[in-house]
Amino acid sequence: MIHIEHLLKCYDSLRAVDDISFDVKEGELFGFLGPNGAGKTTTLSMISGLLKPDKGCIHVGDIDVWQCPKKAKQLLGLIPQDLALYEELNARENLMFWGSLFHLPRATLKANIDLWLDRVGLSDRSREPVSKFSGGMKRRLNLAIGLVHNPKVVLLDEPTVGIDPQARNNILDIIREIAREGTTILFTTHHLEEAEALCDRLAIMDHGKILAVGSVEELALMVGDGNIVTLSGDFTALRIREVLETTPFAVLNTADHTATFSLNQQGNLLPSLLQTLNEAGIEVTDIAMQKPNLESVFLKLTGRELRD
Image (tube, rainbow, N blue to C red; front, side):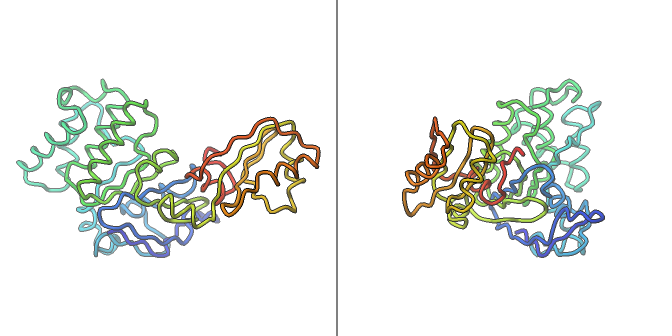
C-alpha cells in the first residue's frame, strides 16, 4: 500500500533521510522506531506530501504522491505530533472544518463526525471549546481529525507524546481497532513498548538510515541475537571494555558499575564470560538475564540505548 524507493532528504551536509527503501502492506500496522533525530518525522512528512524529497519515489497504492498529490491525499490521514487544533472552536467545529477539506457530502461528513467523536470518547464534550480540554482529550481529538474522512492509509507521528498513561492507552486501543478493520497504518515512536505491542512489522531507524525491517522475532534472527545479560559490580566502563576487547563477547552497553552483553544462542557462554572477568580482577556482584526483545535488538544494531 505504501512503496518507498531510495528516499533522500538533505539539509546542507546533514542527510536527515539517507537513501531509504521499504514497503508497507495493505492493512499492515508498521512502525518506525528510533531516537529523536533519527529521521522518522522527516520520512512521514515526505510520504504525506508536506515535504519534497531531494531524491526517490513515494507511492500510496498506485498513486505517485508528488505527481498526483491531491489524489494521494484523499487516501491519507495524517495525525501530526504537533496538535492541529483551533482552541477557540469546539471539537465538533474542528472536525467540521478539517473534514470539509476532503469535499465529503455534508451528510456523510456529519455522520463521520458523530462516529469519531464517539470512538474517541468526546461525544459528551463535543460542544465545549477545545481550550478547556485536557492534554489527553486534545490528543484524542487530534486523532479524530486525521480519521474523520475514513482514510485508507493513516500516518501517525508520535501519537502519544506528552500525555498520561490512561490517555495513552486509549489512543493505542483506537489504533489497534482501526488496524483490525483493515486500515494501513504507519506510525513513528521512540517508545519500545509501543512498537513491540502494536506492530506487525517495524523498521529500526537511526541517523537517517533504516538499519533493519521485520517483526520483532525476525529482527532478532537477523542480528543473531541471544540472551541479554546485565552485570553489576565494582568496575569502570573503560576497564571492562579493555578486558573484553579481544574476546568473542558482544558488549552492547557499558557504564561505571554496569555492563550489558549479548550471548550467542548456540551455547552457554556465561560461565566463560564470568571466568574471563574474574581472571582480570573484575568483581561481579549481580547478574540479570533476559530473553531477546526489541530493546536488545536496538542495542545490538545501534550500539546505544534508545533514550540516548
